[in-house]
Length: 222
Image 1 (cartoon, helix red, strand yellow):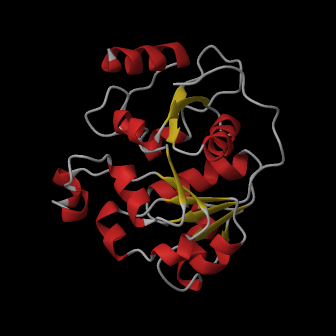
Image 2: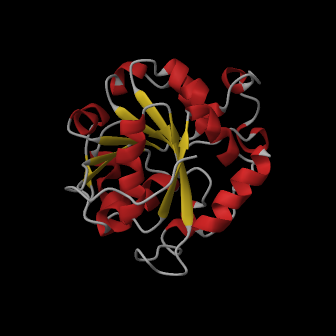
């Protein structure tokens, strides 16, 4: 785990949200509120989600997924995990992908792709998206809590979110995004450390301040 002060903020990253169900729009809303240009895509024609987007995510531009990804600095993968097996890796080749998905068999059913105990779910995502750089975050907070629990930097009530990845530069970009949307980013070295964010992990579903978050992770590692 790495810590320390966050780098000076740069221009807000361009964000493409893939998924217009529950989590995707919530993430898009907090990103827009933080000043990020945001596009949102579903599995087909953007006109089919234009009305929903206008109501649920005002300010987000509905686009074809390929067009949205082509312009994005960060691609948020917020599709139901059971649909990931049919996801085209070429769509996000060469892109920084934030994996917000969880493998939860009671909800998704048993997914053979994610049954290998040697790997965390985001490691499996990375193995399939081999031409992308995957960072894990936003999976351990409920989409309905994401907006409610935001706090400005320096607030004693500000909560933490973990950010795990193999590429330090990508982790840094995503950590800055997390800081901008209203949370303290706790960086973990290695995508495998993202297992700590998964269902049953020490911070899954928990609203913790930075010190509490770090202690929970350290206790699990001890």
